[in-house]
Image (cartoon, rainbow, N blue to C red; front, side):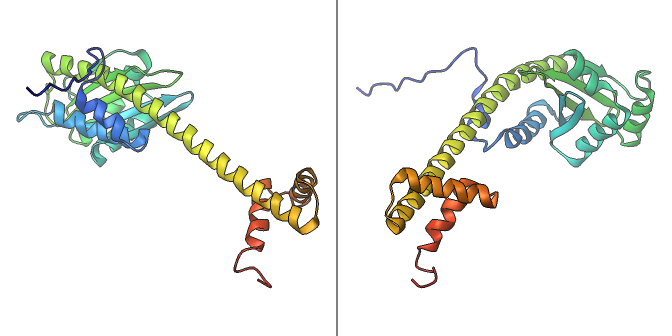
Length: 244
């Protein structure tokens, strides 16, 4: 009898599609672009095609960090120019904002007029909870009026909650990747410095402490990083060095 392979799935975690995005993306920005496109795929229907932007608010700064199309990015950037609108409100207040028809909605009149000029009649903005001081929003647009019914709103809110967990996972993975790269660079730098110290010890018949003193003095005198001085010492003894 073949034994079944056990698969551990966290029932409170994000669904596989979103979790896979976080695991497979090379950085957080890639993840967010994939997320915007997945939102379009998940939330569009035969009678309602949507396009998506993702807004990230940091202290004194608002920016679209990812979008499914240039059209979505344009609509987000127009809103930043007015410094207010449905998407900024959703991110700032952690509240879903629905504009059923830009033709008749009286909130943010300048932005609504600009959205109509972009042939957009419906807007749904949903907050994406994230850690820290930053705030995030999922911005959905459609060319038809009343494109987002109650079911669409609920689906978007569930998607945003799922995306929140995946975004946090992507951020943790990015931090671990950065930490690993920093450690690798530090180890490579240490190896280069040790090699350079060994070369100086051989050339001057001195100990390691004296060799390190020589390297540090050269670094200080030239206002150059120690690892760069060490790299030049190592390079000077290579096959291409003068007199080699």
